[in-house]
Image (tube, rainbow, N blue to C red; front, side, top):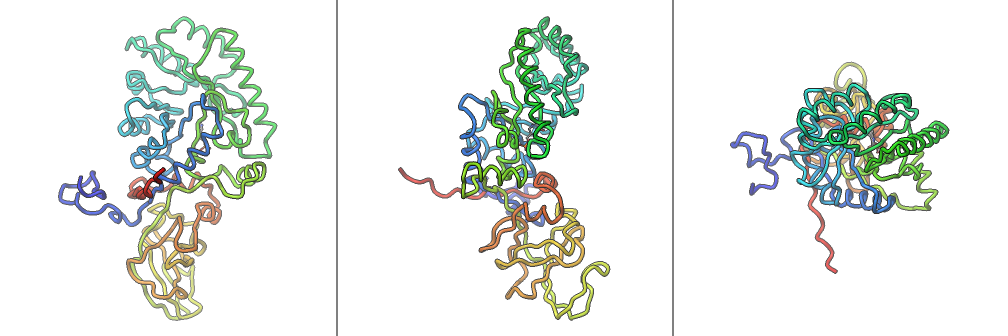
Length: 410
Ligand SMILES: *Cc1c(COP(=O)(O)O)cnc(C)c1O
């Protein structure tokens, strides 16, 4: 390697070039913030509860390949994904003894792969259960399955009237169907307006688990909690939790954040953003008063202006909803976006920021001097949630782990 920045996917000719600005922006990942988040979240669950970090959707935009070693560095050994492709990417980079679980889609073509690789997976239809049994028999190997139960979300999951058939299938094929989990998912545990619905789901899940237990089905893990359930319904923490957004340093929503901090009398937010998104100034120009800037007539200068361009646009994950609306940080100050967000660029007004020059750092998400652009402020502006904004970050943006501060000697 030699060069810590080397980008392995490129022609040998290019491998010595720094990957930071290979594309038009880059993402920094803060291992210390990740450590803080995982330590905090693990402090909320018993030692005996398995912590599965949800790394679907390219680890919520943070990059599976780049973030996974950092997550493992925090002692996490179980990863949840949605698809086979994500599971394969996790497997390629994870340490051997760690585990991956698919919560979503597996085409029949990939069942053999999942069983042979000992990847565990959710089963929520009779078709999937029967196909799994058939493939496990053909491979003469047990499939590690998590039965998802329908408890009130009405999306995926087995209904109560299917349980007889399931019990029968599992009990007659213990060597091929290994019941690793019983699980369910809540229909919005961050939404205080639907508390009744969530409480009913919790009760239904507990009842169905007991019922299956009485009939002799004993899974290794009962699991139901996502981030919001962990904070708002601690009773949903069972043998395993599946935690996504909060491990990345974001609350499921603002109400959950406020209620949690208030209830636990916390002054400081225990969750730290691990991602910063940065670019550079592409050009700086003067524009006279009374001129339209960029496409169309979205923005008219009302004074002699200085404008800068930044090479990120809606084609690179920067939402067009931020046209004439969002800000970026340049020179430690907020620079408003003027006119439409283009496919490859945004134009920002830097009239009041002295000395802005080509190549200056631009912060799209993160800190610069005293100013911070949070994902929340960013997504409030374009009415999308943390989740959506993060997962829309293009996978190709280079990820740069920040160097750790020297460990404290004790
Ligand atoms: C995405 C997901 C989670 C994690 O949710 P967060 O709100 O990000 O913690 C847990 N379980 C299932 C089934 C999911 O799809």
